[in-house]
Image 1: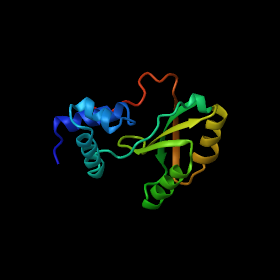
Image 2: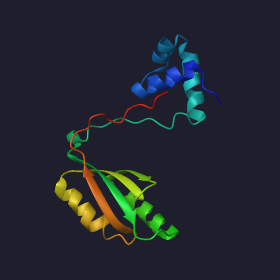
Image 3: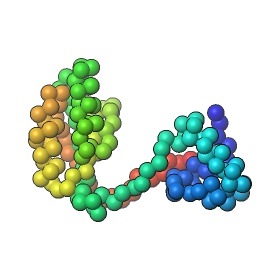
Length: 152
C-alpha cells in the first residue's frame, strides 16, 4: 500500500508524541477526529505502526552506563547463533541486538548501573558463552543525538 501525505504527516506526529488523541491528530491533519482515528487504526492494522512505548530516562533509573558491544562468534553454526540470540533475549541489560556485516557478527546495546556491572556481564556472561570468540566494548561518553524518529 502507498502512503499519502496525510498518512506521512500522521506517522510523523505520532513519532513525536504517541499520546496524541484522535482530536489532536484531526486538528494536525485538518480532518475530523473520526477520520484521523480510522487512519491511525488502518496504519496500525497494516503494520506501519508497530507499537507504542514510553521513552524512559536511563540515568533516573540508575542505569549510568550505556555501552555498545561488538561480538565475534567462535564458530558460525546455526546452533551457536540460536544459543547466542536466546541469551541476548534473556538478559535485561541487553536492550538491543543486531547481526552485522563486516568483522563483528553482532552489535549489542547495553545499559548497566555501573562499570562493575558491565564488567560482570562481559566477564561472566558474554566471554564464557561457547559461541563467543571475542568482545569489543565501546562505552558511551555522551549521547549527542538520542534515538530519533524515522524520516517519514
